[in-house]
Length: 232
Image (cartoon, rainbow, N blue to C red; front, side, top):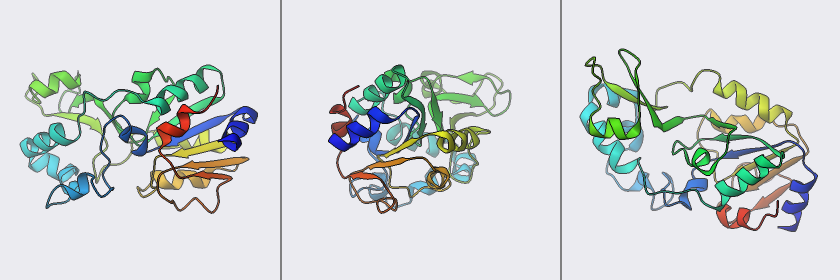
């Protein structure tokens, strides 16, 4: 913690790159742990969260989506809140997240790049009218009779236009990259770290990652507990 505190204090341009572990402390289960979503069903989550499944089994998709992917009770945890403080004091320039829960914005972060979209926004595939999460929970058919699709990146779909490029630009320019709560197993997001050429690469994750040997500092612990100890 002392080393992490020193790195943050000397940094002027921090980028935080986060994954599912950032949200688990808020009660949102991850996919790949022993108790995660990948182990709860006899069929793969990748199939049910694919573009093909959405198009051909829309009702079943939404049943699974609202049962497993939506967590309205979740609130920002210590990690989300500390990132807001780091942003407000000018040290944190960007948050790059693989999460779709919108908790960073709920906490107050303003400079968030959502690689995989967000459950909070939804768009009619026919007329492009926008809908809130509450609206599609009641009905996922638009007034034009088009199907409303969540603005999340499903398997088989490309990332949103420009977001990946913005993330590359931010990571290329930062002096400190903090990678937190991610196994770095999801492509192409996992390749973003290849664009970092700054001074300090920090990894905070419960389990080992492919970055551990390259990192300036590695902390194997719950990211919310770690960030709660940071002084801004």
